[in-house]
Every structure is written in C-alpha cells, then in structure tokens.
Length: 449
Image 1: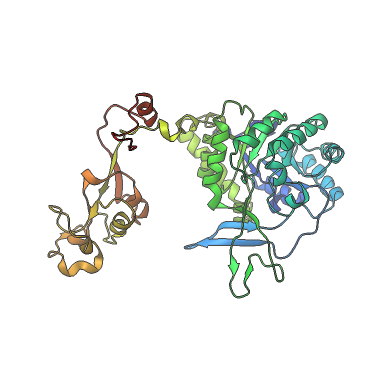
Image 2: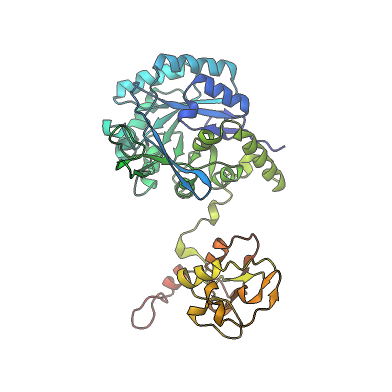
C-alpha cells in the first residue's frame, strides 16, 4: 500500500481527503463519524458570530440521468453557538489526535480575529482557514468574498491573523475574481501558510416558472447563492493550476471544487495540491465514499510505481502551458472502427453542423452532398452493404486530409473505443511564440494566420 499521509504546512493527516467547511462538518458528531469512516481531516463549518439561516437553502441542476451535477446554496456560516462548536472540537481532537481539524473562521475587526483565534486554538484545532470566499449573505456584511476580491484587504487581514495565530493559517480564496493570481499572491504577501480554493461561484441556479421566483425559494423571493459540485471542477482545476505553477506561490494548496472520485482527487494533486476537500459528494452520497477515494488513489499510485501521494503532487504542472507554447505541428485525425459503430451518426451531425465537415456516410470515393449526410436521407443512398452488425451506408467515414483533429466526434460518440484520435507523422515542433519571434506571425497583407 502506498503512503497516503500528508504534511500540509505542519498539519499532519493520515490521508489527503478532508471534509470542506460546509454542512458535512457542522458538528462534532458528524466529524467523528467521518473520521471513523476514513476521512483524514475536516475543516469545521465556518465559525463567527452565529447567524440566522433561511429555509429553503439548496437548489440543484440535474443533467441527463445525473442528479446534482451542480449544487447551489444560500446557507451562511454556522448557526450554532461558538461555545457548542468549541466544546465539540475538543471532543473530536481528544478522540482523534492524529486527524487534522482545521477551524474555518470569519469575523470583522482585528480584535475580533484575535479573540476568535485564541478560542479555537485553545480548543485544540490544528490550523485555521480564513473564509474569504463566501459569495452571498456574509459579503453584504463586509466579510467573505468582499475580502477575497480586494487583495490589499486580504493581505492585511491575513497579516492580522498571523500576529495572533500559533497554528498554520490557510487562506480560502473566492473564484469570483478576474485573476486568481491576485488574491493568491496577496495571501502569500500577508504571510499565509497555505491556500485553499475554490470557494463557491456566485450564481442563480434556476427559476421556479410557476411562481416566477429564483430557486431555492424563500417565501416569495430568493437570492444569488454559491455554486459547487461536479460542474465546477474544470474551473477549480484551472485556478489551482494557475497558482501552483506560479513561482511566487511557494505555499501548499488545498484543492476544492467538484471532487467526487479518486480520479478527481488525483487530478487536483497532479496539478499541485497537497490535500483535497470534499463537500457536495458527501452531501449526495454520505461519508462512506471516502473508502472508494482511498482505495482508488492507493491502487493508482501502486500501478504508477509511486510510493506515496507526495510522489504524485505537481506531476502535471509542467505540461500546463500558455496557448502560444503549444506545438502547432502536432496533428491527430479521427479513426472510426466500423465493427464497433452502431450507426447512430451523431458524429456526422456534430462534424457537419458543429465542427469541420470531414465525416460522411455512403461511398468514400467521393463526398456526398450535405443534404445526404443524415439518416433520413437513406432514399438517395446506395444499396447498403453489411459492415460489422449494421448497414454499411450508415457507417461514417473520415476524410482524413480535411480532419483538423478537433475530437468533437469522439466526444459525442456513445460507444467506447469506436472513435479514436490517431497521431500523424509530425514535422519539427513549432509554436506560435516561435513564429512571433521569427516574424512569421502575419500573412502577406497583414492578415494573421
């Protein structure tokens, strides 16, 4: 078995899987049940002055047969008393001394931060996470993302906490910003020991068209909330990678955003994360999913010959490049396996209407007119021949010289392995930046390539 233990700026954990600061980490009972299930750490639901939450609080986007592809919430920080939370933090650390317990905090004045930090550290927490990301409710009060969107203020408040804290300080960033590097560098400038991201994305999940009220409905109205779940993973990966590859970000990163499987976690770690935090998947399936996360990541590391999770960290960072550094001479073309094709012709429709018009049906000695490319045009098609299990004229073919390798056809194909992208012989690698450096970035007459 690979070594899954981590050391995140001095915070030790038996594995990189932490509960994010959210409803699953709202009480000591929940956190202890999570640790019993196998979670390595938990970021406690944000502590501060208790608030009053609304009902209802959640809305979701389903896609096809998948429930909760995206989740929206208008819930705020803890509505439980600080004393109750502190008592339960003590109980958790007494029972699970080797698991990571991080206190998420949100308050206003410098003295408020001083008092709150002392209380949670006295309760035994292993570290602090500064919630500068909440995009609703708290930001209207001058906290949450209103801090995360102002780099100077973020750096100043972070520096306050570093004055008072005896434990490591993580800065949680909002994705609701133009350039994630600005708050990331501000966290470093303020002395933060680590960064966690992303918090939720400001959003409206949908509209109740019967009542003409945004969802989730609170009586006769609603508000924007925070969007999370599998749908936000690509955004989170981009922002994590943007920080991880910047030479000025020399502190560890805890990745958050749409992590549901061990593969999701491995991708975040490969892009530079030391730990990963999970919320929506737990809200959907429960704490037990951590066994699949642990077993899957362990199996992957063993298959790759990696002895520890730290061997995986950052492996993909060097391959994340600016567009101008990509090889313009690298080419792939689509290949269709006639024996696997079911004749749905989704690839034909996608290529003809949404891509580069290089996939056809019928005889491949000449291109057929556009009106004959679709299944309902069989009347003008030649007599079919059997290929594999379906009529030959329904098996698409690729005009390879015209294929640009966009791989849309592969993405829409419902049959695994039916369409593959084959690498073609490559000329000497050349990038757009190479062309610019050589003065070949413009065509005669000033028209760009």
